[in-house]
Image (cartoon, rainbow, N blue to C red; front, side, top):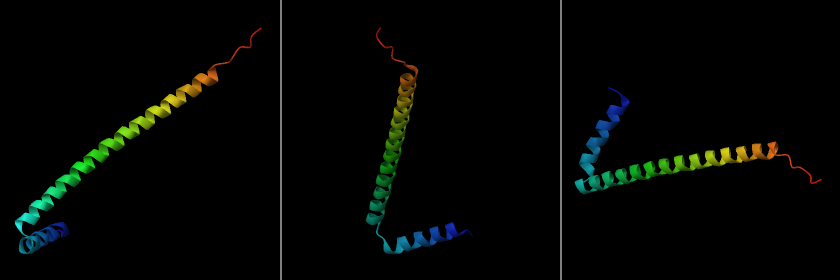
Length: 75
């Protein structure tokens, strides 16, 4: 028997003994809230990463334009 299965069965038996159904429902609600928060954090971090990458590319292209631009002096 794997250690994960052992802890899972022991944990479920202990929770059935000591925890009422109302508390189990609250724990499931908390798990769902944590999952939703985690998903929103992942989406926000990906959006921020995309923004940083586009800013870096824009800055890099502006630096290339500045280096290629040679100002001409008036005659």
